[in-house]
Length: 406
Ligand SMILES: Nc1ncnc2c1ncn2[C@@H]1O[C@H](COP(=O)(O)OP(=O)(O)O)[C@@H](O)[C@H]1O
Ligand SMILES: [Mg+2]
Image (tube, rainbow, N blue to C red; front, side, top):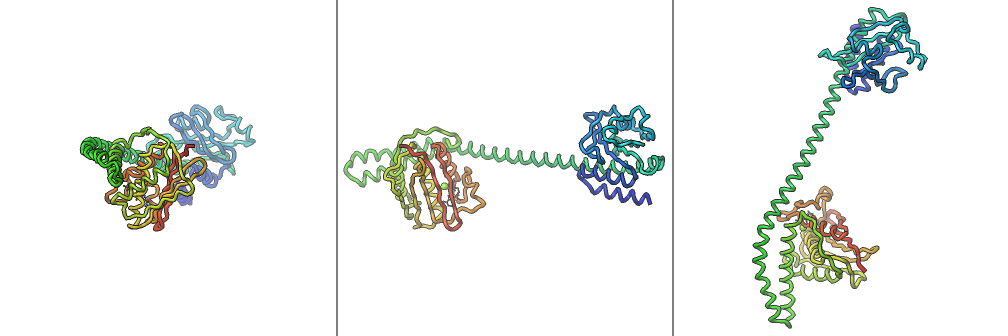
């Protein structure tokens, strides 16, 4: 009969893995099984050499901590002895104050040290006041059996909590490692690109020197409009190649560009003209809607802003079928210029919306993934903002906000 009960208790306690809930369950079960008025589990804190109880019945709702050199529970913990005290008020270790404070009258006390498999102290089990009669030797046997079952359950719960903590630490460490690895990979990419770029930079610039021969042509045909226009385009293209090379070489560094008061209307018109001569863009309809602004001044580095516009226009073209329209709009809003670059292309899927700004993120077979990263850096360097809205299969609009100058 008793054995059956103990087995049931063992099953019940071993199924609770949360330490605090387990301690509550042990106390509840002890009251019923041992027929006592009060039961407490003191856990042993090996570092502080203290006993503490998180739960109890009635009074001990908050944590109680006692030094291992104090009291009856401390004595049991220190000596490993089971104590039965039938006349506590005449016992030298008994602390009457608690009873005085709570109004509880302790009649008898039983304390049993709890040990784990390695015989290390894990706590003390204490019961007070047998409901009918006094605690006797038979009660002690049952209480011992109960305490050892409770000890196993507590030890398991401890181990599980420890395991959980270790697991969390491991998970954290794994995440940190992954992040560190990503950073290293990125930095390596940066360094490799930087090296590559400065290696070819010099060489390409030398070769581009020949383009300056067109300067001579400009001087030879000062009145020929076509020669003047085409040679200017060649020079502009050369400048952009040089800038792009510098950009790739420096793109990990932030630089302060020289900025001057520039008319955005004029800049956008020049950019559109330039795009019309670009093989990739020639089939697209570039529409500039300048609203009511004839002139729109801002403190900018015109080359850099032009680079931003070209990057956005190229992205728009890559996302839309040939002959599509790409619209550019300019309007003023609260001391800022807003530039829209809008396409009616395939849109940006939700799952990559956050990633498109990352350097090297590209969905194109021959993309570098640097375009938007460069745009963002340039716009932020101008104390502006860049963002986008996109709907799948309907199109995308990129917005640039730049502080206006008077
Ligand atoms: N207007 C757009 N429409 C659809 N997708 C776009 C648009 N602009 C940018 N993207 C997406 O963002 C990615 C990153 O763009 P970007 O940084 O310019 O690099 P790249 O053009 O070399 O791929 C593109 O590969 C594309 O998937
Ligand atoms: Mg791009």
